[in-house]
Image: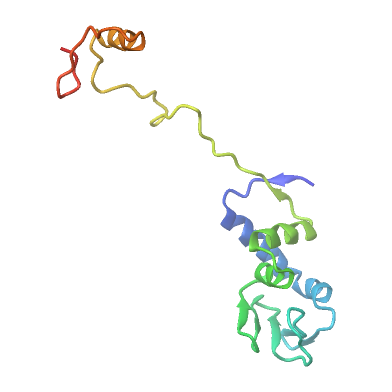
Length: 158
């Protein structure tokens, strides 16, 4: 399966939700086989609870919105429905659904950060030049000897 760079997670979710809405009747027959169509809704038993009569768990086939009116559980698309039915995160449900629909998998984006911070592509440089004796001061401190500089309150070698 090929991979596609969706850009942002929102774009990936929107693309999957749109494709799932087009295939919703077929998906619902697979996910909720005991259900049936009533007008523009799919009515089924809720598999997440001990449901004995149809009527409280409905999915709108035109919008993808769903609700269990007995418990108050609800969602806005096929991704949230699959996440609810499988008790997984919406991210996992979206990836499973995209795979089931034969959609290209999203490309995992890297942070794009380099090991060295940059400002607008320019190498950062200090605003105040270092005093010439700074290098010697650092070296003398590492050898535990006397510093060849004295530092004033402004951290300037005098």
